[in-house]
Length: 114
Length: 113
Image (tube, rainbow over all chains, first blue to last red; front, side, top):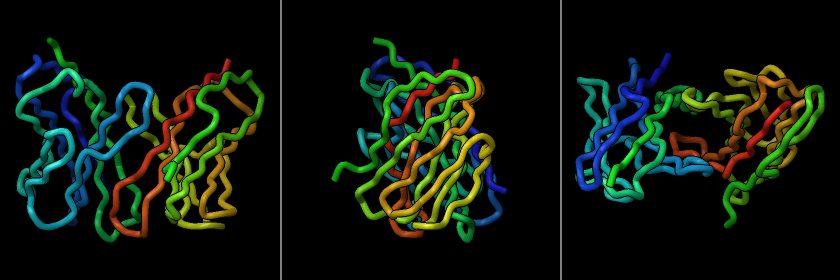
């Protein structure tokens, strides 16, 4: 069975500081990995995804994530936080050969201080 | 394209009432999903569909029903509303039948009193 763990339900950073949101997954087969962002009172939208190929994936709004198979991780980073990055972030995994149903983490709320 | 649309945006129900949450997508996606989102709990899958006429239960189907008569529409039915169904409901769709990202609607915020 697949599972996703997001470490830290809340992460607080200052504007201009590095953003690091952690995601670890469990899977015995190659995963497909996603990061979604949810702004207040909106649905989720895709930030970036890893399917195959290059392990460093770049997404929208300056975010990127690196798939590390040995660490079963897919952490999300951004070099410099902006106030507009304040939102809820969800990591999700789909297992290859499975049912195309993603498993979502519980989410991490990013708080950006001026 | 309008993408995934959901109606209503907000609704207050009394215990025991029924209602249908509407979901429509205009992207010709085969896969569609219903989730509920509760604070700190992420997304829980209620039902999903891999195409018109085919539906299946997710993680938390009790108290809900769905139908998929067309590719575009995937309504969620609550028959006897209970306070435990107070939540935000999201519909999503996926193109093709691969490992693609989900496209989400804006959500319906439901309160059962």
